[in-house]
Image (cartoon, rainbow, N blue to C red; front, side, top):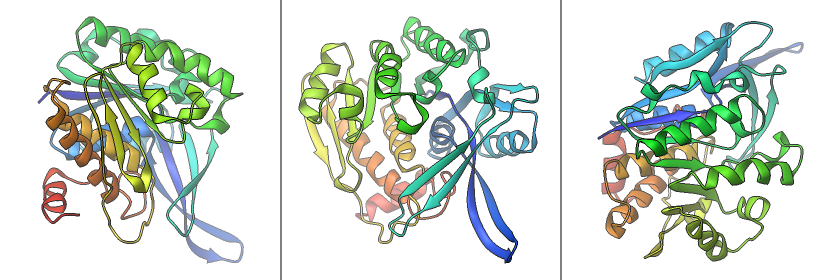
Length: 318
């Protein structure tokens, strides 16, 4: 099994804690950020994992690096940025059904936005089974070019590129700006994962079939569309199918569920051909199971399952 290498944003997720007094609000900081979550999830599932990104020389940067390293994630590709640049914070509000709303606090520029192409070296993709990134590092330079360099290095070494779009509309100036930034990376991607609510804003269609055909026609080998409580859809040029979701009872916090889905899928596909429908279906099903388990506790990383936990959950039928 190779290594899952992820690049992009890492943040400190800030959750409301217990009240302290009438004039004090308690908060709990938890590590997050989609690419970092994928790396931690992959590590827990038994894969080697590495994260490439940027944090500040601040309290939250120290905290995040400790968290990643404690999970066995390689952090040699993390660059620390000098003040006044800071590690990004995301305040998380959880609704009764476990859904989330995010309010971001980022310096201008944020530490993760200053990763440069020079920071992305060939050794980072050595031994990788997949490289992964999302759309947030495509918002501005120089991290946009750093992301493209990672994709190009991977393609040059025949390492599959997994693009988990993870569109956050409120971070972009417009949908048109997001489409313009995302579009070139689709041509460098081996696997593209989207939520069903991202198809319209980024691909101009709400039809999974039309979106899939457009992506496959551009050279993508595998399209994954997560459908939340309705499971997930997978497709290649030769086959397609759907897998169901898993019931975990009450959804506590859905933060990180999509990242758990992607990590479990990629780990199961590591060193496997992308033309084996049985393997891809199994991988997508494992992704749905991991995503469900990720919803059972607060925080993006806290409930990410280990390999043994995932196996037991699936053996019990979810």
